[in-house]
Length: 98
Image (cartoon, rainbow, N blue to C red):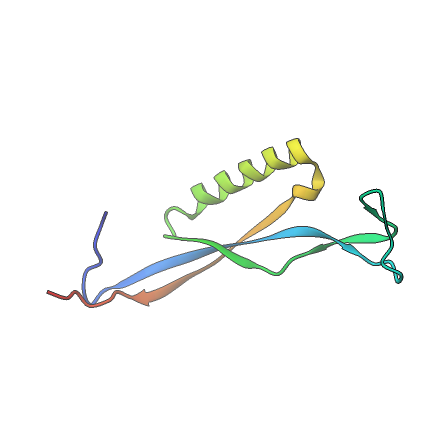
């Protein structure tokens, strides 16, 4: 595990994700045999999945997309997720204490 060098800046990149969710849009909130009488698929808000360095972001995005493609192949389109890269942003390394 590498340690941060005091007084230097580290570039971090965030990978965000969001999922689809079924929402009951029936005015009477009817629900029959495990199915809404009327519903639609909506996207959830973007959330941080992980932090990474700019050098590793492409590899991590590829793994996330492959995992999502596998989930969709097993569970259907309801398992679909979207991913996006936010960054890089620079954060100061914490000072080293002795």
